[in-house]
Length: 345
Image 1: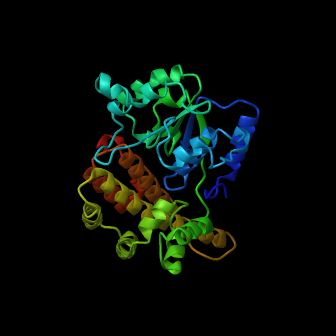
Image 2 (image 1 turned 135 degrees about the horizontal axis):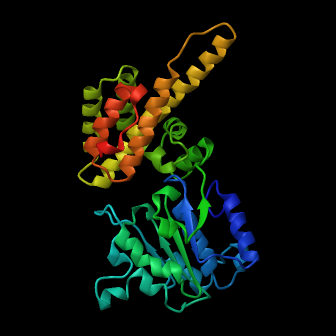
Image 3 (image 1 turned 180 degrees about the horizontal axis):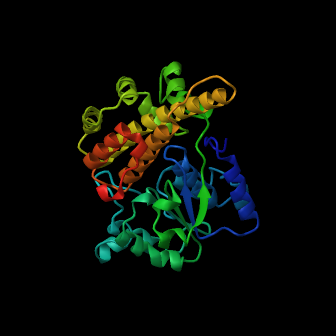
C-alpha cells in the first residue's frame, strides 16, 4: 500500500523507475474501472512531485515543506484539477480556455503554461476524461502537442477506446487493474464506507474490483431490486423487464449522470448473473463429455452477455436511456439474437 492507496504498487514502481532515468512524459492517460483509486493515485503522485525537499524518484513527499503544506491545504498554486461538473454530461470548453480575457486566467490551458511557483513543475489533472467532447478536446490539443516546459498533465478515464484519437495518441497509457475482493472489503471497512462487515463482504464480491460500485451495492434498496431482477432473468419478459428497470433507474433522481450510473449497476447485475450461468454451462458440457450432464444453451448465454456489454457501451456514449433499456430488455428476452443494433440508437 502506497500512502493509503491499495492495489497499485506495480504502477508506483514503474513511475519510480521512470523518474530515476529522467524519462517522465509530459502527458499520461490513466485508464481502468471507476472506483479503484486512479484519481487518488494521480493526486498523491502530484503531491510527491511537487515536494521541494524529497527526491522525485522516491515518490515520498516530506509533508513538511511549504509546497507540501500548500498541497495538503488544497491551495497549491502549481496544481490544477478539473473534472465533470455536477450538472453537466461533458467537460466544458470554459474549463480549458475560458470565455473571455478574465476567465482565461483561471482556465487550465492558460494556467499550466505559468512558470512554477515552487519546485520545478506545474501539474494539471483532468478527471472524467471519458467526457471530452470535440470542442473541449480541441481546446486541449495545442497543450498536448506543445506541452509547456516543466509541465505534467494527467488525464483520468476508464478505457482508451473512450478517448478521442487526438488525445489518446499524445498520451502515455497507464492501465490500472480492478482491486481484488479482499482489498475492496478492507477499504469498505477501514474507511467506514459500510458499517456491517457481512454487508461489506457481500458487496465486495459483486463489485468487480470497484469500491465505488461496492458502496452502491451495500444499499439495501439495490439488493431488494437485485433479487427481483434475478427472478426476471430466469424467464425474461421484455416489457416487464423494461418497466421495472426504467422505474428503478428513474428513482436515482433527475440528473442524467445519476441515472446512467444506476443503469450501469443494473447491467452489472445482469453480467454477473450470466457469467455464473456460463460457468455452470461450461461445467455441464465438461460432464457431458465424460458421460454425464446435458446440453446447456451456451449460445443464448453468450448472446445475453453481448447484449449487456452493448448496453453498457451505449450508456457510456450518452445514448437515450429509455431506448437503451428497451432494446436491452428485448435482447435478453431473445438472447440468441441479443446483440443491440447500433441502428437502434
